[in-house]
Length: 357
Image 1: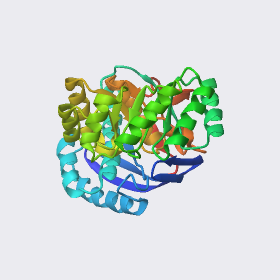
Image 2 (image 1 turned 90 degrees about the vertical axis):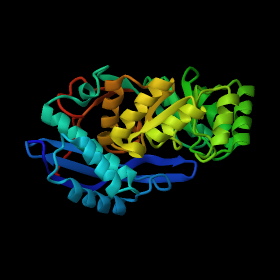
Image 3 (image 1 turned 180 degrees about the vertical axis):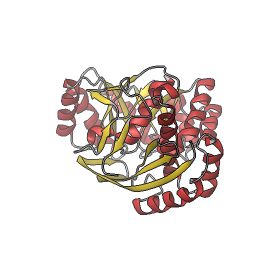
């Protein structure tokens, strides 16, 4: 009843309300891949493979091709023996971590639906709701101020903005966000765009203007371990590792060498099995935890929301990208009330699916 009978991947395109711009990348339209995995007992699970140029190694075409190779690897195998399946896929698709993550989402979702339990219960049942931040992309001060005020009105208490492209412009954007939402916590995400000297100068300038971030996320390149360690010592604010934490081995190194105060888990980087290992390492070593994503629909964000709610492990939750879409291609799943995602009504899996599959 739990043997995999079919895996199918299809394009998942969606329009954005506005271009999504980070240091080194710009996305005008979401061009992801959806995955459906069917079990012999009738349950189907859904996952998503996000595509973010310059960030994910796959594009839509290579993701579809890799998904079809994975289908040949997994079809006929027993989903209950998920650890050997995950290990086999790592060997079969070593250069496609985002594809592996989407398939793992579909696998765990199918199992939870087979057992008729919601994913947040599968992951521990600590809670059945989460509260997310929302991101203001790289944009001009007027747009940033307007968005911050809009999000304040919707009840958001934590705002995140992208930095790392230009120090002066970044300072002005942060100042404008503070004017639009004077009481919000601020997460600043550099996406590896600064070096250490720029980061420290940026923070110094912010402090002169009375601006203090609650969290500074991956300001320097992931290869610059000395720079990461220096920022942990000298930045004066909590520093999160994002691009530099892609596996449980990375998390263990970050904890051992004190390269960050917080690690950001994104399922697209590491998959579900590795995410659970990173959570365990962080808890054991005293690292804080953040959960985020690429630019995904409610298929992937719903799965991540269940993981965050069920484990109760995350101090920082950044699962906002479905709110940036002009349309929602996903049926059912979690419901939204401002920054609050409600999961308690879901009876099996993450609850989301696509129509006309």
